[in-house]
Length: 554
Image (tube, rainbow, N blue to C red; front, side, top):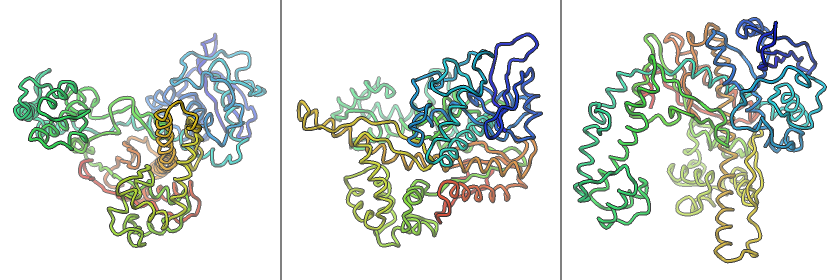
């Protein structure tokens, strides 16, 4: 059963939430107005409905705060974005309709009117509604899935994306345990004692003094790119930017301390004392995750920088007394995803023993593990020169199906075509860069070719990174379900997910349950592989550690 929720203007004798029940086949089962949303959801949740709402962030935090956890949902806004652009649903009414309210980057906050066609199951899905009518949108989405050539494939993606939205809200609600005193001690050790506002920490200032002395620039402000470029130029060092990779090419006694300064200054600005005061409250770090925030389907954050926690401060992530962290990351995830997507049996076999790169060496394709890693990165990211370019022909000979898959994706991108992941997320359309012979000048033709190749590199990686993101969503959804089966108490009092970083998860668990949690994480990785690739014998090995603080896991 589906229960579609919508905010409505308060009418006399009604609540502010309208709930429409639908059977799994789409038939209407009734409509009611709800005055107490939490009580209503608590009453219905034991029947395991799939809650349908416009945006998980607009509904689920309120329920969590009331002590209500839901098992399943359908996030219309996230699913709309997928169906709007997927090649699997390209001919649907939803995909071909003009831009509408569901295409807005943020949810519309205005309530919908409980009249007219709202919740009318006879609605013809010919165009997007002018207001955010969730049932009209749900009707369009169901029609798009049903009309797809592979409804099972796209349905799995929509379910995984919606599960990810629930997980993101739950992780923010539970928070990542964080010791402010440990964070302060780590910063003090690295940067020096906390200074007054506007003053650099002592160790950072000491390094800056060395840089100023060696560049003979006593007033240098290294945090100003213009000021730093000028000082480097006066010292006879010609660079076009102050990026670390470019500075590393220079030979001068000021460069080493300058690079040290940049590294520590980055730590101070991104995760220093101001960050600690802002983001750690009552011993918990609660970042704002954005599921599907990257075009490939990877997550982003809208604050807190959770996806970029540097190793220097991970020791401040300390489990509660009597609890442990189980930290797991998927080894060599993207190369394994490529092997599975292409059904390249040779590459699948190379990874069967555990270390995919060692397996590539054992196959005779390359001589060293480093060469295998460089060659695979070149295949997935489009490197055509240097060591990657030299090794690519050997990799293509050993694993023709895998290399052909990414090469075909690159050529499609160069032609301005769309590529699609394993479950159905499609890339944005590129610009067609053909007709170089008609360019007004050779410079125009060169720029067109460069843009074409750049987009080809994007589409080459899109199918791999996007499918890896789908695998990670399925992995987390399975972990979440299995943890609930392990202990069905309130989730933050039982083992629960607290952190996610692309191919890595952290579960906070009572110490006595750490062993079954480790087994759940491994079983979930295998299940995610089956959901995406069926019975293809591709393995997704994990590196798993049970630790007291996150810093011990690496």
